[in-house]
Image (tube, rainbow, N blue to C red; front, side):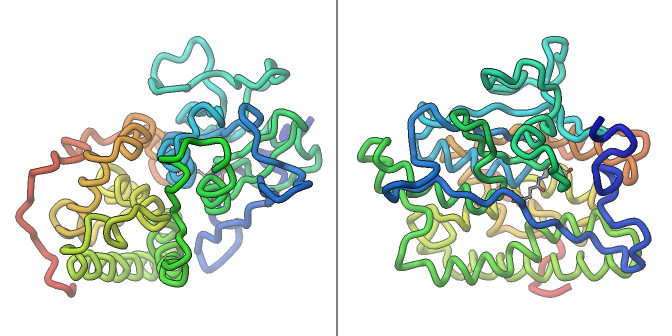
Length: 348
Ligand SMILES: N[C@@H](CCC(=O)N[C@@H](CS)C(=O)NCC(=O)O)C(=O)O
């Protein structure tokens, strides 16, 4: 049986750093399913109401990117979704059961796709799509119910598909929303380049490092990138409230999901503690709270219960007893509550 002798075909699920790799550095694998839903005539996966299902975890920042986009684009009736349980065990993400009472949230349900009644773990979906699959069983997964396969499991690509490919199926108001508008593409690409590696993935590189050197390299680079983000938001505050002025773009969505997890989880669990957001980065803090408190898609798709429990109880190599810290209290401050800034003077 698949996975009987080991957690994944490549090793244990908690092997975030390859065993024996002396660098101690976390290296993220490439996503494997890279097909696209496309409006082009004759496309293998055309946009169609009710055809696709999105598997996510509320805990996961990559998955939350596409959940936010789905809602902002008014795709609730077009693409169904469900969330796995927040706990990731030796077999990876599992579907909640009727006995689970500790994972409240919209659509936190057993696999709802017809024909999947016996599926207990997300890995079952991966093996249905490819019985020889050898990669990690990650969320998000965009699944095609019609051909019973995975279309794509790379959040940045799913996010982009949601922005444009379903426009014929949504109303006028949502059709004009474009997270990757032509006039900003070059700037968006350039911003993704440093934010992905240093911030979105930087928190993981910091937290999963198994040598002091690998950790320090990642955490220092992460905070330099946060300084850069802070400087940009400070400089452009008058044009805001979003990263590029008046329009929500991919950059807001992709950066938000990391920054919202920062104080509740990354500061302590991933040792990203040179500063925190609330007392160290006033402009980022304001930008994040504005999105959370004034744009419902951001707030509705943020589930702190799943976020805090997942990280602290699914990484025994970091937190062997699985104790979830109570603070910070609250998880996010109110919109109008400014904090006296400590530490941040533009340099460490
Ligand atoms: N490149 C992927 C990364 C997704 C990813 O790493 N998801 C994590 C959760 S935050 C996951 O499912 N990990 C399970 C595993 O690696 O076993 C994307 O952006 O879609």
